[in-house]
Amino acid sequence: MAYALPSNVTIDLDQDMEEGKSHHVICTVYDVAPVKILQIQLLRDNTVIQNKRFKEYGQKGIQTVNNTFEVTASRLDNLQNFSCRATLDAQQTSLSVLPV
Image 1 (cartoon, rainbow, N blue to C red):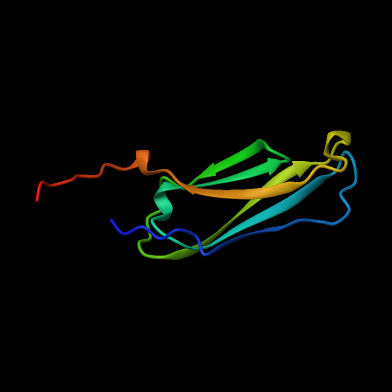
Image 2 (cartoon, rainbow, N blue to C red):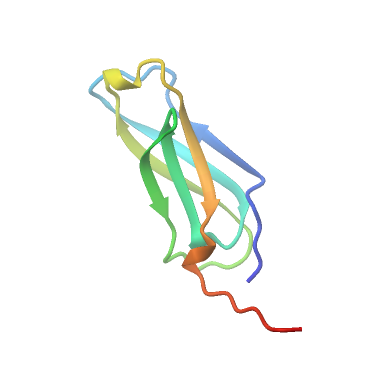
């Protein structure tokens, strides 16, 4: 199985998020493989608030993947940073190491 760490991770969200209203936050992970072990997390400061895994993703090769998280703005969000984190969880796959 070939692995490719993301070349970039971006976040797209509204500048002004009105309290009590639902907003879309889009995390995009560029040039990653394999996607089926990819995990994208949405964070508020250093706290993970949502998580997406792609275990059932069937395409092979290097891909660009995005995920839309839905968040409802609250006072807790005030002056806190939102960010996206992408990780490849190798524990989700079985790897075989053969002796040389």
